[in-house]
Image (cartoon, rainbow, N blue to C red; front, top):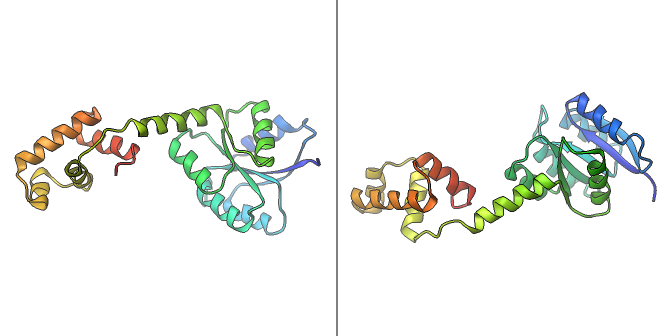
Length: 208
């Protein structure tokens, strides 16, 4: 097997130089260059095709998540490894949904970075330990989401839209007292103390 051609997309030169330094002595890799913006990355890819792109989530001109989708549309053979300081399930899932083969954090060791690149190049998925734990915890939370009645779902949706108790009562042709009872039940089921947290937890559990 020849060297794996690696391209870095990140707007911080310390990160670029750090990655190059980490892997400079590894004979399995060849650095083909770097880009600090989405535009310069796409321009480079019009003329060159690396094997693996290390793609930062935060870029000055476009989200790395959106750029990932753009790259995979135009260059489906390129493997993309998300690279970020953010260990949030929404970022990880969106990167993977948009075609990334893996996701690691910028605090990765030399061994982990090398392993991640080699895994995605081999067609496998690679998630850093922290990223895989984040996804696991999110999925566990989703499976433990409270069971809501049809009426509770309706009221939860209207609460999330900012309606007051009287507004919900008018909309559903029920009494304000009934709405208040449902609202209290929802707070209890989600184990939260206020509406803001109710909406937040419901959204995390994909019930909105």
